[in-house]
Image 1 (cartoon, one colour):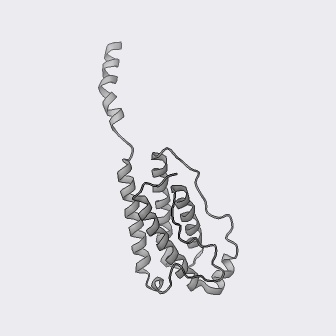
Image 2: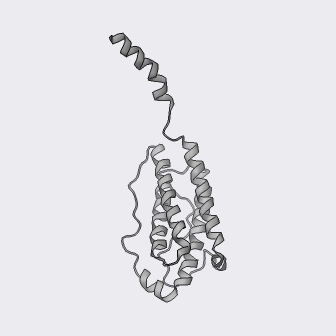
Image 3: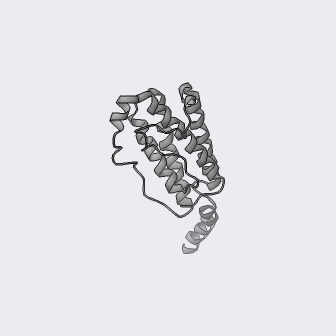
Length: 167
């Protein structure tokens, strides 16, 4: 009887260790594809082409700019801030992009855990000081600058993923 259970367990042994929840390369490819999809969505919003991501607009200093080197945790923090800003915008153009950012953050967490460096879920800024005032004063400009900078940040992230960023 014991030999039968042992034989069954030994027969299952290779299957238990040969399967992975999600191969890292597949997760990385899905992450890159989602980034490209978000960039395409931003390009499809016609008015975003009118502003450079480097342009300085008074009152919009809380919007992240471009970073030379991004770790997975810094990518997550940046995306959390953009997601919080996008959910504050009343425009229907950004709803799907905000949802895509949530999915992208989940993929980044999978990449981080596969590198044995899980990090706590970032929730964005506790308060985006002055966001309401800025939205009232210049909703259109805020949306354009946010989407333009987000697009630049996503393109930086795409390049960083080719070099397997750290934690």
